[in-house]
Structure formats: C-alpha cells, structure tokens
Image (cartoon, rainbow, N blue to C red):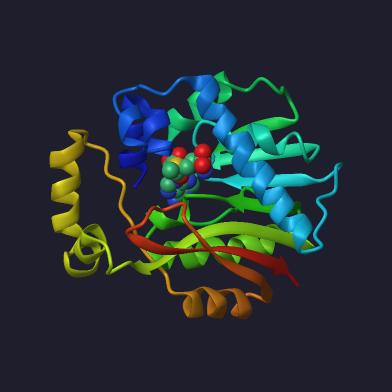
Length: 241
Ligand SMILES: C[S@@+](CC[C@H](N)C(=O)[O-])C[C@H]1O[C@@H](n2cnc3c(N)ncnc32)[C@H](O)[C@@H]1O
C-alpha cells in the first residue's frame, strides 16, 4: 500500500488525488487543485453546521490521508491547528512544500495501521475524504477505531466510505465481479504506472457496527458522489462518546 501511494506521489500526485481524466499526466494547475480543497472543506463545515455541530476555532483537526495537503490547508481556515498524516513519504514531502500556512499546519508520515503517534482525546475533528476507499477493510476498521480513540468526547469524524459497486454502471459490474488481482492488472495497463489505486467498499451496517463497538455514534449518513458513479458511497458524521 505504501509503495503504491509513494509511486503515485512521485509520478503524478495531484491526479492521483483528484483523478479527473483530463488532468492525467501532471495536468493539474496547483492553484485550481488547492481551490477544490477549499470547496470540499467549506462544504463539509457547512454540512456539520447543518447538523448543529460547530467546530471550535481554537481546536485541533487531523486530516487522515492528507496527500499534498489539499484539505489540510483549507481546514486551517476553520481550526487553529491541523495535522495531516499520510502513508506515502512523497505525499508528505509535497504537502510540506506547499504549506503556506506555517506552523499551525504540520505533516507526519504514518506508516502503521494505527495512530499510535497521537494521544487519546487529542482532536476535535478527524477528516478523511476519498481515502478509506483505498484501504482494505480490516485496516479500515482499525483506523475507524483509532479515529474514535484520538477524538475528544463529543469530537467528530467526517469520513467518506464507498459501500458497494453500482450495478447500473458497466464499471460497477466490473468491480462487483472481478477479483482485485484482475482489476489491478487493468489499472496497470490503463494508467501505466506502478502505482495502483485499489478500491474496497464497506457496507453501512458494517461501518455502523465498528463505530458502535468502539463507543462512537453515527450521527448522520448521506449518499456522496466522491468515489464516482460506479460506487454507492456514503459520507458519515461520527461522534466520539
Ligand atoms: C485520493 S488521495 C486523497 C488525499 C486527500 N484526502 C485529498 O482529498 O486531497 C488518498 C491519500 O490517502 C493516502 N493513504 C492511502 N492509504 C493510507 C493509509 N493507510 N494511511 C494514511 N494515508 C493513506 C494516500 O497516500 C493518498 O495521499
């Protein structure tokens, strides 16, 4: 997993994060790329406000799977301190280079299947958008449990997770019937990189069971288009108990 993402981070990082077809081959303009992060974070914040959840301006957020800091930098407009973590050294290096906010935003490599670098009850918000879909479910569940551990009681996680393929699309049928190995063969052929972006869905019932068992509460679930039309995806707001 780390090798794949590190390759992507070296070869075509902005496209690996926002995979619009016409931006493949380092075609993203960085300003436009970071503007999409501001939009996504503003949308998440107003989504939370709509649920009666105000983020404390003097609070601390964790951006899990931060990539180049697209969302991390935008989060710093809403909370005092933001930590971005990623499994790929190349992504962390790129995020550091683009840190225009300064010491309120920091980036850390996180290579394990836990968040051992962070204390219990140490964040007000954990944000993870278009990340957990790439992570096998046993690790996904472990990270969800860790999100609840590092959140202070009452803190919230805002995460996107695909549930299952959309069988009304040809690609969705492909995801449903082909084994991951075959899909990876196709990905390599199509995109030509060593890097592979695997997709792993987790059904809503399973997400809710993991959250409940870890003492959290799913406050709100909405359909979300972030993984594209071939998947049924949900955006979850989860509160730590
Ligand atoms: C599609 S990008 C999204 C980046 C960022 N969330 C954004 O929206 O701009 C997925 C990111 O998740 C990171 N990632 C994948 N698996 C991870 C893991 N197990 N732990 C931390 N980061 C991971 C990848 O390196 C990559 O930077």
